[in-house]
Length: 287
Ligand code: IPE
Ligand code: MG
Image 1: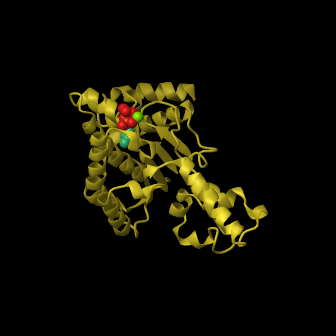
Image 2: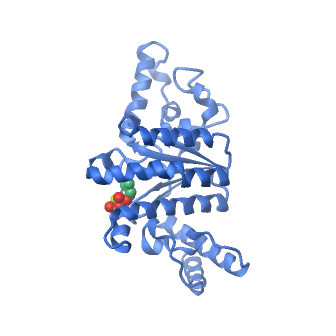
Image 3: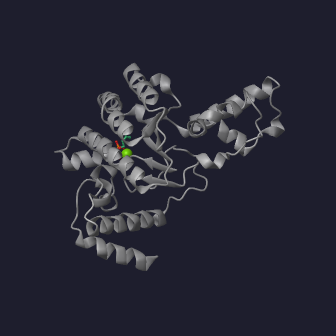
């Protein structure tokens, strides 16, 4: 499970699109498409959770919020839908305050969820109007309601049960939703474990290190440090070399320089292949 805080888009737009920050958001969408392709190609990744719009983002200037909402609608209706169906990718929307989203976004995302419901290659959770604290409070409220109704004893509340009431758990365990509190046995987790829906790695594309109210409960053991960047840099570098030597087409995020440019939006710029060997050698030496 890979989690990504999409960040640095406006900076990218200002820098590469004559000061147009909104174009940076579109470039971020393109970079997300590339990253989804990379996840499919890399294999072994079952879930990708991207933080596209936080509850805090509602306080941005109305013109920017409107532009983002129309981007989400168009992206869900068009690019993401086409690519998800082509690549067998299931898309889910995770939201803790969906009432604030315009109807156009809700409709586009609901249609996308339905259209991709049967896809099994990779699940992409798009967090829109999401806030981790709200998510935790909602889980606490659900448990408290059950306890108040006498259906749950306070001593039966465990970390595992708490996780089951978070949005990420529902998305990862569609078929087992009934095992959430309020239905089924809260303590019998079957073959699943709540930690299976926690991210293994968290990437923030701008190079900053803030978590910004994203998956606060779920990132307990997630790898987020310099070592992760080094690991991914190594993987990308070896993939580049492999693609060049085998004359295979390179996915954009492999020939790109997301770590060099420190923004997901910047990942489509190719760099000379000869640098790859140097990066491979240097990262292997550090390891
Ligand atoms: C992330 O990029 C995209 C959204 C939050 C929607 P930003 O818009 O935060 O870009 P910067 O960090 O200000 O450059
Ligand atoms: Mg930002």
